Length: 445
Image (cartoon, rainbow, N blue to C red; front, side, top):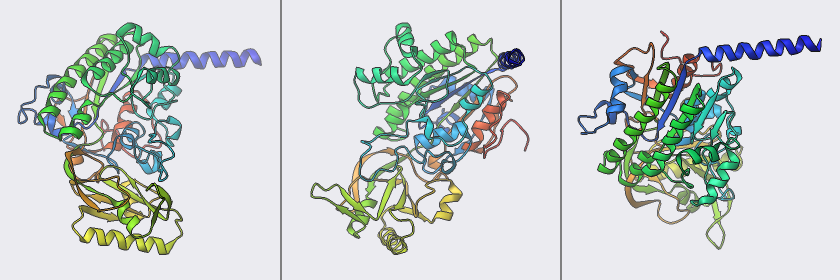
């Protein structure tokens, strides 16, 4: 019996290996904050991005991709790899709910918090080799060659931390080959060049069949200088050359049998005003501050996501507080505060965000959420770009580009849903994400 079980196990492993070798390679590259018109209307913006424009000519692309609520990095990137909304996959915004600031600004870094199957989960189960350079929510992810996204400082100690959190020995190996990994939260162009060089190395040396790469310098520049700014366009042109390097390496390593997908997580809007919802809740007696002006207790608290917030009740059954919050929000909205919509739980559920919130507030472009706990509700802020607004606002539309064997050339998919990406990529690898809410874009409706 033991010999039979061993033989069956060996046969299964060999079968998975053969199937894995027959599958193509899929490379997923995220350019954080990439607006679709930057590529589709490159001439209008005088942008020199030949590599990204190749995707429009040679493959499929979307006029826009409707994202998730809120339109921020971590929920969006998790939807891109699961095909489900944040309410289902569990990564509800960038930072976990933390009114007492006990988490010291920690993010949703850990893959164990994802409550839905991911592309890397089903790929690994099928015997495929996977790789990642800095994709969000990948600490502890089931990825063969994983350089997780994590930071706590901006010193060499962060690289030590990444060595411990990534695939054992991998960061040391790639640093010996291409130089030091960027330290901490660093999304400058030099740092992105290093990340791209590591992606090239992994594609050439490890030959993964599913590879993830994340680049965020464009997002940083748009926060600082706004969308359509000269600095943003200069940064995108630099990133375009890195896209070309990654694509070339992938095609060379796989004999051309490779699919390249470029996505973004959200668009961008110009803002110069801040709305302090928690200051309004504090003024109404729903948040109590201590003598150091920190949260002492709360009955209702706004969980921020850039241009949207979930209003959470300490006691979800407290109807008196619910009604008071509703009245506070109505009063704030009536004063031209920049609030666009106040959604109840049923309305928010349709958008798939903030499932445990009593209300969800979305702002108008031009406004962003501020961090003040008291004082004026609406204040003048530093001009710059942001996101996080309702996903149906055109300013928030994300990008989707796909090229590879059999992908029809020059096809405009028009508007698609972000939940379509994961099942489409799974289909290219002959895999299936059973829980996905989206559809395979390469299959007829």
